[in-house]
Amino acid sequence: MSKKILIANRGEIALRALRACKELDLKTVAIYSSGDKELKHLRLADETVCVGPASPLESYLNIPSILSAAELTRSDAIYPGYGFLAEDADFAERCEASGFVFIGPSSDVIRKMGDKITAKGLAEDSNIPIVPGYKGDMPETDEAIKKIAAEVSYPLMIKASAGGGGRGMRVVQEESELISSLQLTKQEAKNAFGNDTIYFEKFIQNPRHIEVQIVADGKGSAIHLGTRDCSMQRRHQKIIEEAPALDICQESLETTLQACLTLCRNIQYSGVGTLEFLYENGAFYFIEMNTRIQVEHPVSEMITGFDIVKAQLKIALGMELTLDQQEIIFRGHAMECRINAEDPETFVPSPGVINKMHPPGGFGVRFDSHIYSGYVVPPHYDSLLAKIITTANTRESCIKRMLSALDEFFVEGISTNHSLHQKLLEDKTFCKNEHNINYLEGSFLEK
Ligand code: ADP
Image 1 (cartoon, rainbow, N blue to C red):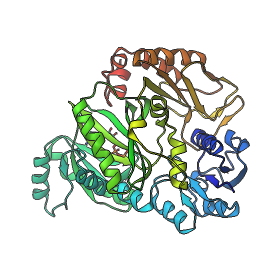
Image 2: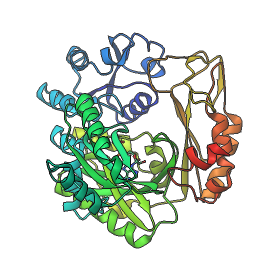
Image 3: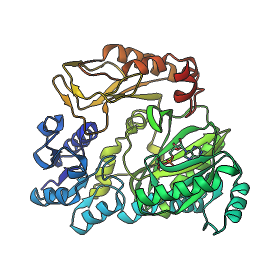
């Protein structure tokens, strides 16, 4: 009997997971909220279950309702995707306790990696380069705290150990701001995460965002699928991603890649994951590990031919999968543009009816999306509509191919950031690969 997978997500990633399940002859259950009845993958799934009203808290984040749907449909495993419950250790634990396979690492590993101080410590133990700073106990007196901060040196960042999603961190430029910023960050962390433990990190001024995709089977085999460069960001949201990251110091890269694999083996990591780094002046600085699939996974798939979502399913279900680094052959360059339903200048979300749309196509063009003509983009969820991915022999031809794909692609009825992408792809700094994480919001938008 083939196994049944409940897909606990929506939009493009739910469709991506459904396609992978079909290829592996797995049965599928698609859950949805009452605001999401028109999702494309619902028509393709073997079964569908409504898990609650449109509000995400009552549907895609509603653990009892999702577990009931899994029980009702006699599902074997739950696929979390990204966002929602994907990195919620309690959810993974409750899946395990209810007898469902959680398609991801164990709840114990998710919990450890979700705590930034613990994650940094584990990374350091595996010789992964981390951002210099202080992660010990904070002393009682302001004077002693100031002394520690002076040793880290300004500018520095105060970060909440339990923080996530860009929340719970603050840059401190000089000593006079330290104590008030520290109190504010602690208060915010306590309110948002119920945990006010904080630590200091040196503020890296103009880094690139480079990440490493790993795949591990929890039994001692771990491979990497190389790097991605996701430096084109706005408010920590990635807009364009590419693989591999270019103009990187090969020596630092090789030791960092090996250290990432050591970490996976040390913590018996099972599944796919991403180690995120800031990169400046030839050095890598680990910031966090995401214990889930990432939006930008297709660019790594396109340069390696390795299906990351199928690997997730196979590892979790104990299906045969050989992980051999020698078999991963890197080829060419890939780039992804995230098309969001938002105004290209003000970035205000733009839900509503897509009257008409036409996807791009052709050699080296991949279109991962759940949208179609007549689809209504609901206002309740994130604004990602589509990912256009192009692959070519060089970065330059990848950019050309992306511009041509963007020319072909149109959506009528709602606003998208389509024109922002066109401008970025023609931007000199981007074309020369000279941008960093501050470029889009800084010099580019100020032009
Ligand atoms: P979260 O888990 O909330 O996403 P991260 O630790 O991944 O937090 O950091 C989010 C972003 O904040 C990074 O992508 C980077 O842009 C910025 N950032 C984090 N740490 C530093 C640092 N030490 N120096 C400079 N920027 C940083």
